[in-house]
Length: 148
Ligand code: CMP
Image (tube, rainbow, N blue to C red; front, side, top):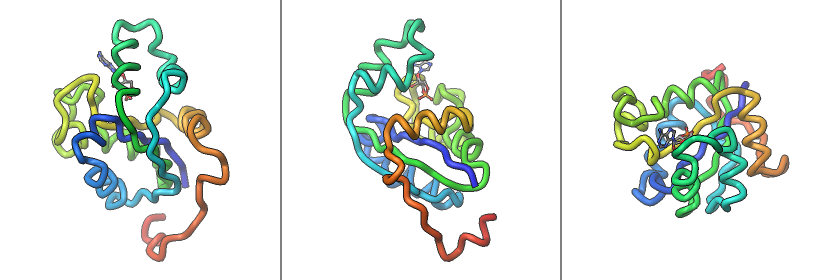
């Protein structure tokens, strides 16, 4: 089983789409093993998006991601990293396929509702940015055998 980090961004929270996003991930078979709501600090935003530091959209991105609360999640399941990326869809909502969160619910390149780690190594780094080890919970769902 793999773990990934997913964030429902301030536009997702502000538009009342927390439940919609969680419903999709849970129905797919990804298990929520950590969850918290937090407004990212500018420092956290810089750490989250450091690789984009030199891009023209960096400062507006930091302003957006710190503009309101986000929901931070650790999801666990088979191929969790790839599953969550697929479910989110392409970064630019205009290009995202119908059936994905961004393709169904978003219109923007920046305000694209959700984030998911792009690799297992990134997931480990991003999970550690927001969660202590004891905040990520080990537990078993009764139907888990069906998801192996
Ligand atoms: P995310 O998947 O969280 O990773 C980086 C984020 O930067 C991305 O989602 C968007 O919110 C934002 N982003 C990426 N490219 C652009 C762009 N060209 N213009 C504005 N924002 C962008």
